[in-house]
Structure formats: C-alpha cells, structure tokens
Figure (cartoon, rainbow, N blue to C red):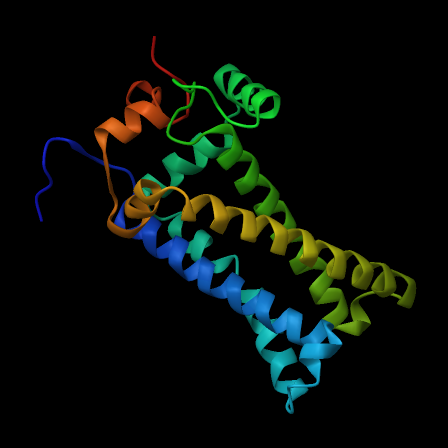
Length: 210
C-alpha cells in the first residue's frame, strides 16, 4: 500500500514482528512470574508445575526474536542507532531530568536517549535473568550459595523489569503517533520533525550528518 508524501517509514515488517513477539513473550514471563511469586495469585492456580514450565520456556525463548532479526539489515541498523549514545542524547537526557519534560525542538535522532536507555536496560536485564534462571532450573550447574544468590537477583530484577515495561506502556499510551509507527510502520513527517528532528539527517550508525 502506497503512503502519502507526508508519511515516513519508521519500522519494517521484520522490526514490528520482533517487537510484537518479544512483547508477547515478555508479557507471559511477567504474568507467570506474578502467579508464581505472589501468594494471593498463587492460590488461584491449581497446576503450579505447568506455570513453572511455561515460565521457564518463555524465558528461554525471549532472546530468540531479536537473534532471528539480526538477519535483516534494517534491524542491524536500528541496533547500531540504539547502541550509540551521542552528544545530542546527553543534551536530551539532561533536559528531561532538569525539566521533567523535554523542551521543543528536542535534539533526538530516530531514537531518543530515553528509548536508548530503556533498550539497554531491558536487554541487559534479560541476559541476567536468563543466566540466573538457568542456574535455578538446572540445579547441578552451580553450588547452593550461587543458586541462592541467583534466586535473589532473579526475583528483584523481575520487579525492575516489570516497572520498566509498565513505564514503556505508559509512555506509548500517551503517544498515538509512536503507536501508529509500531502498528503500521509509518509515522507523520511533522511528528518526526517535532519529536526526532535529527532522524532524517542521521546515518544508520546513529551519527547525524553535518
């Protein structure tokens, strides 16, 4: 389907499916974790072993959508953008922390500093959760003291991830154009110029062209 000139391609089909699949897996992991950890919810479940199995396999599958997406050039380009923290990102973050909101026009590329930090935190947390989860699942991998520490880290990091995900959902709920970009792949150029003014001048590596 052709798009009007005022529309700008933000995400490819592969990127949108990676986001959707990861969101579903993350949601299942968090919901099953809540039912396994919170007594008020645990009492509602008759087949706890099934919940444990679903939680374990969901956690194991969580990194796979992104790993599969590395086969696509657009995914690799956006990962490079997310992994590059430039001077304008520091200015964006400083403004956001100082004023609790970001004044316009914001010095942001395709992804602003908040989105880059969120992606880095969630990616790192998922890797730690995977490692600690494997120690809890396969008890012969580590001594008891390590497994005790892994359980502590796993439980508290799950809470941190839940807060981050809820914050991500809250931010998306207040930005219909950003949701449209993830739903359809296209956003309005006016929105892009207002929220991400450096995007169209930015290289795939995240550096703005002079």
